[in-house]
Length: 294
Image 1 (cartoon, one colour):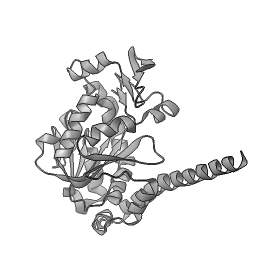
Image 2 (cartoon, helix red, strand yellow):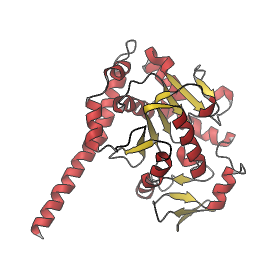
Image 3 (tube, rainbow, N blue to C red):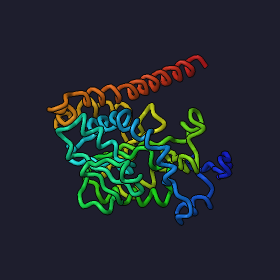
């Protein structure tokens, strides 16, 4: 471990093996012992506005993409660490025909008056649910978790996953933090105590049967697929989008609301993947030119 930065009197370190950034060991131990909490009333006062903006904005893109990337039909979708559950409200508006498909779980919710009234919102852990899921999302959650707490979350997720289940995780990786968002790590205000690299995450997820797929062109998100072993390239993910399962396309083209979510998913995935593929090919061509002219 090498020293990275001190933020609000908390020392952050960079793992020399995987590159993850994390608060010092004693701070993490205090979080695990319950001496420090990310989810106070003050936290929720600051977070509720951002949670609503994500839920009625970018999180809809991520849900739509997940339906397109999935290789199995999605009948049950879970939003893990859903906060107030606003994503359920947003999905009820744009995919009303599939309202019962969507579920959410939150262990440390805000006060009841700030939560969704959706019937599939559950206060508790994944272990408290009795059904299995084919897909889900976990948005701006794992940066709050110590490695051992994250490991337990992944264990529970595996126990509630059908073979082929696919999950979208949104959390800034060290490259993104260093280059674009120095304020992302924040031990007290935002409660962001770890920035996990994909290298650091792979063994945690692999222990419970998940394969991580990088979302090429994004250093703040990844996919975790249950009971599959081959990591997807950018080209393979783009192929998944264009060959999405008819059942999942049908859900996105909601019979009551219309096909907005299908369009959102296609355009969102293409925006990043096609750019990433173009950059990969450009870099390959430039390296070839450099070798030929050296």
